[in-house]
Image (tube, rainbow, N blue to C red):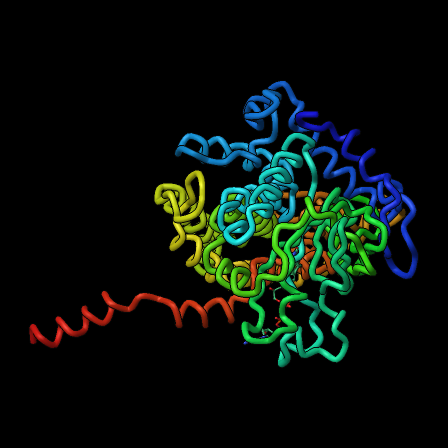
Length: 483
Ligand SMILES: Cc1cc2nc3c(=O)[nH]c(=O)nc-3n(C[C@H](O)[C@H](O)[C@H](O)COP(=O)(O)OP(=O)(O)OC[C@H]3O[C@@H](n4cnc5c(N)ncnc54)[C@H](O)[C@@H]3O)c2cc1C
């Protein structure tokens, strides 16, 4: 099939999937008033691949079919491959102003990275290597859109999943048949689920090694979203159905997040990537560093987002005549520094790309990505704070489009004008800023940037426990020796 069009993508979503939103089962996500605009946004992402000016930059020749396929599926072998993939990522990220954390390229790269580590998945059973290789080829050739679920439900973090009161709160194997595994339980958190064709769920959390009950939870797999027995329970929608003047971001980029719930779902054997091997599953957590690949998408998205945020902040400062104040200049410079820091992390990781044990292709350097991953949530929070600090009460001078165009438009023109901007334009700019920092959509963006890539608190604890302190300790030792 090669690269899909937006229309083909939308058609694929009309498949009887079980999506629950605000108390109702959604019949057709492409026609639901609170989901259709996001579906259209993603369709436009697929259409980019067919733009004659972009097609070459977004595709490469499939090694199996020879057809042009999306660059997010490429197994990077060289620096040139990494640069080509980055260019394709940039096109999507800039087209969506960095607002789509989960453009399809994110999980495409994840699965590609898993395929790069196929050997270790199949270390004790070669079928699992074959399955992930075949699955990667399948999604590449069919240009599949994926959601993914790494976590167990947030019920009681004091207990291991094996200790929960009901063994099928977390996703576990109920039965093993000749056709495959029967599973029940739930997994979090499936961003993009209503708009995805498939769900990817590798083992990504450690299991108690000496507990015989762990085996049933040691499963990695992928399935179509429209599999019988599989349902997705969405949070409420942040697309209020309002005009894009009023909600320019909420109305276009609400990716949606959902809990995946499985009720005696069959996972066919050819879709199983891990089963019952707790020791291997735990060991692979340290070896299968999917993030070393998908962080390139994260960095590109962050750069696009920061350029957009910088433009908004600069626009606000100019609009209300505050650019001459030193502290305002300093705060806007902080955003520039953050933007350039992300770019530097990305270039360092790409430059440090290397072969790794057990994997094929090259892998961007780990250290720059780890540092960026740990630093980014606070950096983003700080930038959102800066916007609030500079826009101040202006974020509340945000009447709606109806006000701007209605009987009080004269008042809007007079009292909402800025130093260098007319009333309606200023309201539009400040409403955009509010959608970024203040609406439900904006709050979710901030929460996303804090947690989408794991819990930094725990990641830093692990960093503390595993870091090689040799050089640091030696440095102090030599200092005292040289006194
Ligand atoms: C908007 C959004 C989108 C997301 N999209 C996806 C997605 O598409 N796919 C996916 O798989 N995941 C996704 N996630 C989930 C994300 O990976 C998790 O939120 C993250 O890993 C943290 O896990 P948790 O939410 O279960 O928090 P918890 O692990 O329950 O943590 C809650 C709090 O308890 C603390 N805590 C818990 N356990 C410990 C411990 N052992 N030691 C110390 N402190 C602890 C944490 O530090 C935190 O403060 C998304 C999250 C968000 C917010």
